[in-house]
Length: 80
Image 1 (cartoon, helix red, strand yellow):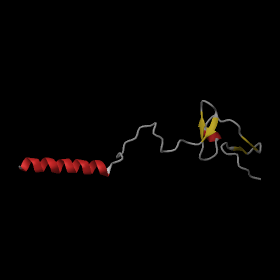
Image 2 (tube, helix red, strand yellow; image 1 turned 60 degrees about the horizontal axis):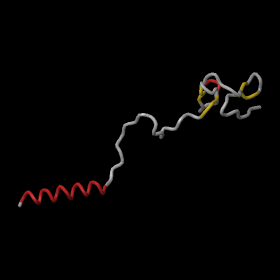
Image 3 (spheres, helix red, strand yellow; image 1 turned 90 degrees about the vertical axis):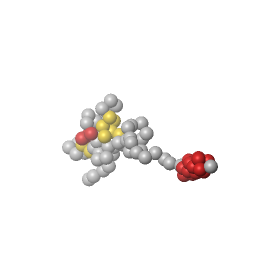
Image 4 (cartoon, one colour; image 1 turned 30 degrees about the vertical axis):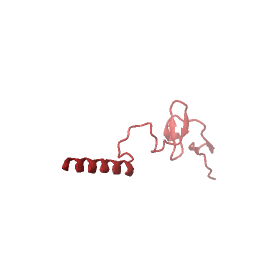
């Protein structure tokens, strides 16, 4: 007989679910052991903004058009 113990691993020898963890090996696949609380938790998602990340920021087409217009006005003024 199989049963779902998520977020903990099944203790097959006892036919029961674990209720605490000492390492991630004590957790069901896809879960990690929080060593401070001894609780199996889902891993953090990749979209957290608390960590370090580097990538292109959001751009604004409006800002680009304003810059392009200012450059055009500056160029036109210099020609006179």
